[in-house]
Length: 471
Ligand code: BYC
Image: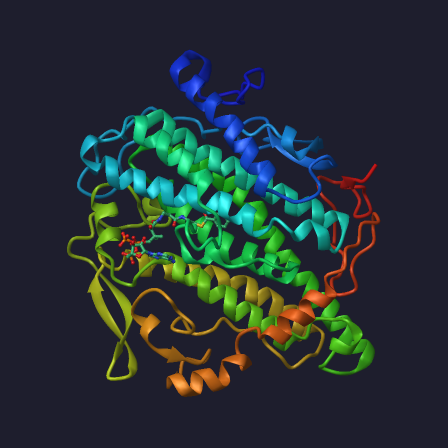
C-alpha cells in the first residue's frame, strides 16, 4: 500500500480512518521530537543531511534520497503488505489464521516483547549521540545520521503497535520508552548492551556489526509472529536494518584496509606511532562487542522463549523454511553446558533451547564477516587472523555468567581473569588511544588517517559528495 505523506504522520495503515488512534499518535509525536531534540544526535540538527526516506514498502526502489534536516525527517508507520491468507506457522495455534488483533490471553507477554524490542531503538540513538563531533568523514557522518533516524523510525514502528493494539497500558509504555535512558542508573534501558557506551567510531562500527545483527535475528524471529501487525512491521524494519549492518561491516573493513596499508608502509605490526589501529586492538574491541551482543539472546535454556514459541508470538529465524513439525515438543537441540568445569555438548528440549538456537544462527552469520576481513588480511600477506571469542567469554547472562574463560575457551580463575583481562578487552589506555584518533574530518572526500575511504558512495553519488552540508 502506498505511503501517505500528506498526513502529519506518514503511514501506510490508513491512519486517517481511525481518528482516535491518529490523535493519540499525534499527541505522542511532540514528545518524540522533544526526546530527539534532548538526547538525539548532538550539534547537527540544523544541517542538511543526504538521507533516504521510505516511499513504498516494495522490495525494489523503496527509498528516496535528498537533503533533509534531521528534525524534519518524516518518521512514520510503514508495514509490509498484508497477506490476507497468512496463517500462524508454529506453536499451539499452527494453521489458524494469523491474528489481526492481540489475542487476549497473550496480551501481557506480547506487550513485553514489543516493549523490549522498542526500547533498544531509542537506546542506540542515545548511545551514539556524541559521535558526530568526531566523524572520520562526511560520508560516515551521513551514515551515522541515517542509522539514527531509522532507529527513531523503528521506535515509531513499535509505538504504533502499542497505541493501536494495547489501549491505555500501550500508551503508557510508549511514554516510558521516551523516559528510560541508556546507561542511566535510575532508569536504564532494558537490555545490557544498550546501557554500554558507544564513545568512539571503532565502537560504533563494532556495534552496528554485532549488536545491529542481534536486531536482524530478533526482528526476523518476530517477523514470524502469529500477530500479523508485528510480523508486517518487522519485515519492513529488516530492510532498513540491512544498511546498519553494512555500515558496520564496511566500517571495520575500511579500518582494516588502512591498518594493512600502514603496516606495509612502515613494515611493522605496531602502527600506533603512525596513527593507525593495530589488529590486536581491533581484536579486543571485537571481543567486547561480540560478548555483549551474544548476551542479548538471553539464557541458553529459557521457559520464556519456549512460551513465546508455543503461544505463536515469536518464531525461529526463517521458521517457514525449516522442515520439521513447527511444534518442537519432541525435538532436541544441542546446547553447550558446563559440567565439572568442562564444556560439554548436550541435547536439550528444543523448545527450551530456542534462544541458543537463534544464537547459533547469529554466531555463524557473525563469522561470515570475520572471514571476509581475514581474507583481506591474508591477501596482504599478514600472518594474523581475527577470531570470534568463545561463546562463554565475558558473559553476563546465562550459565556462563558465573565463570571466567579466555577467548579460546579455557576456564580460568577469577584471579587469572583479573590479571589477564587487559589482554582480551579494551583497557582505559586502549580507549584513550582510540579516542586520541577521533579527530573530525568534515571536508568532502577527505578521511581520517585511521580509516580507508569506502569503495563507493551512497546512492550512486561519488565518495567526495557533500553528504552533510555545513553552510
Ligand atoms: N540484558 O529467559 P531469559 C535491536 C532478562 S536488538 C538484560 O534468559 P528471554 C537493535 C530477560 O528479559 C534486538 N536482561 O531470556 C540493535 C528475563 O527477564 P525477566 C532487540 C536480559 O526472555 C541495534 C530474564 O533475563 N529485540 O533491535 O528468553 C540497534 C531471563 O530471561 C538480557 C529483542 O530482544 C540482557 N541481555 O530472552 C537498535 C526481541 N537477556 O522476564 C536496535 C525481544 C535476558 O525475568 N526480546 N534478560 O524479568 C526477547 O525476545 C527476549 O526478551 C530476549 C530475552 C531475547 C531479549
